[in-house]
Length: 229
Figure: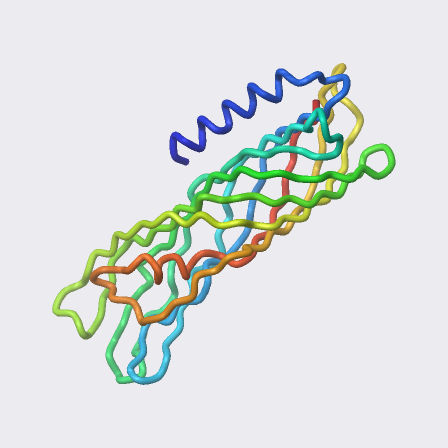
């Protein structure tokens, strides 16, 4: 995770600790997010050959703090560390040329800032709607072997993609620990509100940013646990 992500988390933690625990809700959570990069057209000669990297599981952390002037509304800050998976194609494309992508991996990480509304039900349940901006860093690394190339090509490309995401959450808070810390468990699902489409087959010797951004996931599911203060 980049230094900017860590600084955001530290600043958020400091803000949360300054809130009045008796009146406002502050939360810290650790999550495991599962998603899959989008499909990629790897060749057009003349028919399309598709490939898709495998499912990824990313670990991250979020901080939420209730806004004093708007009960039930929260600000959020967080981020996810690197998660990777590899492409699966190893065979021949439509014109009979060999192509091997199994040594190429897709990696993503992100930082996020946003706002949420949490509706509480009963003693411990809550449902939330979250709108957040994610600064996603996408990269390809590995070796491409193609019958059209004299030698294997080392692929190393990176781009940053800022997108809005909509997320829904449901969690339950258990009996308290000590005087103020309350453990909770939850699940959430998120949907990217902006997507980039691929417009050309990739040039594996020099991957363009648009094609790389087209690999960004469209949705994600997560489990999380944390403490409320």
